[in-house]
Length: 416
Ligand code: HAM
Image (cartoon, rainbow, N blue to C red; front, side, top):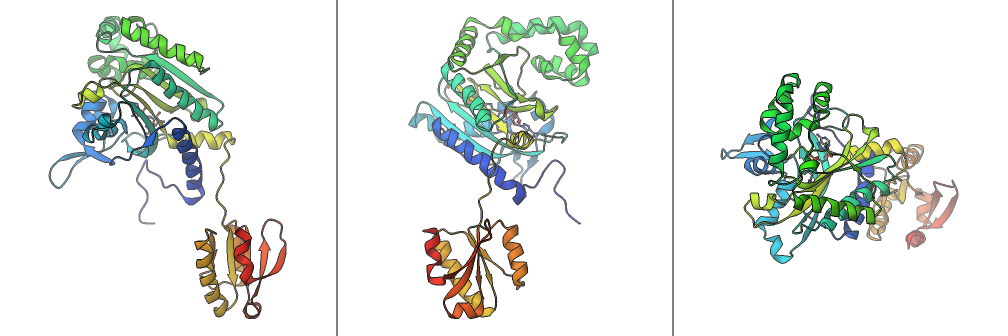
């Protein structure tokens, strides 16, 4: 075979795509319950939008973006995540003017040039939620509760919600200095990536999974001990709301996110079924991003989740009910006249919203029945030349195997 999907990309084939549709339908119904509206933004944007939002010193910007010059020599990047584009659209279309709190959700492909492995792809799919316009800790809690609700509704049993506060520009520099002081004489022991992080983005050292780094960071000062009064109050209010809402969380002071726009609340939901790429979803507050991208100061909070990772867990747990929509009717024909009749009947039935199909390969009756079976058709109508002349055909129920002669003029009534 000449062509193959590129490394780290995958096709979602028909025997898989219905599972995606089932899960997406479930999500859309949850988003509606929480009053979120869909937004669809382009899959590529100006590179600068991502470098400014995600942060110049993050792994995403440093190593993972698909960036190219277009014909007009503009630097373009395939979106590595959804938040930046959503905030850009929020500002471009003045969505904040229409409503002081804008609640949005999205689905879409994201692109990161990472080393592919289970649950990690170069083109992957996210669903995400952004609520732009409120600093209220009850909104953080609503969002976290929604993420947990999604896991519960998807019948995921083993998920764990990690919660942290990563402060704001007032308190973060204080912690940063303490962390740098603590790590200064240990830098030599760190992996190469963390040596760079020490210089450019020290908080990210906490995200390193390498043993040499986790050991060195074991007793390092954590952000939560240095929160300013405002961040502290916000954090305890978020926790208070979560308790009221009966959402179980695990306070993880080492939780940091891979994107620089976060302030205050940070959270992730992890599943042990996923192996090393164990994060199902992640997010938090990003109160400074709207301003950073040219808007008025506007607090915001959001999260996103990898759909592939959810599908992996759902398939492993086998508790979420995936259901493929069955074909209502397959029409098997014998002879050219029956075929012509069938083509008209199919059209009429489809107009009545009955899903149906027929044979286009001149197959034998036996082969047509086999095909109907393969397609999971609920019923098969067998139209033979002689019966058709009498206005009759045979209807077979594929579940029960029951077969009866029926009047062709009555066929539509079965589904009305
Ligand atoms: P993120 O943590 O970079 O956050 O990604 C969110 C989720 O996308 C991850 O938890 C994971 O499930 C999935 N994901 C990330 N990279 C890959 C990959 N290479 N392959 C498969 N799945 C992946 C964000 O993207 C933020 N925009 C979330 C957010 C929204 N924060 C506020 N609003």
